[in-house]
Image (cartoon, rainbow, N blue to C red; front, side, top):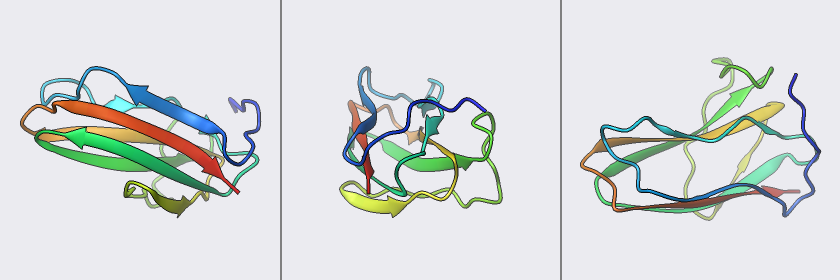
Amino acid sequence: MPYGTPKEPGSILWAYSGPPVTVGSPALVSPWLNTEGFSRAIAWFNFAGGTSVHSIEQSFDGVTADGDFTAVTPTSDTEFVVRAPFIRWRTDQSTANGTKSKLVLRARA
């Protein structure tokens, strides 16, 4: 298992402020993030233009998403429960190109 350093509550797990996600581009996907040290997380994000579909995928092994864990549909500035040893962020752009793609994913207690 690709366990990383445990994260303290309040730690930034992953942040993105890069080129906007576009319809023809691959999904914006974070690396698998070790959830040791916290059981909740919160995301702030701002995706403008088109339609962006966001999810938090969960995994036991940090290699593949586990279908036994329901993917979380995050809402900006709303906390969610982390159930698996690993999570990752995923954004798919479904209609029209995005004009802005920014997010911060942070561990909570």
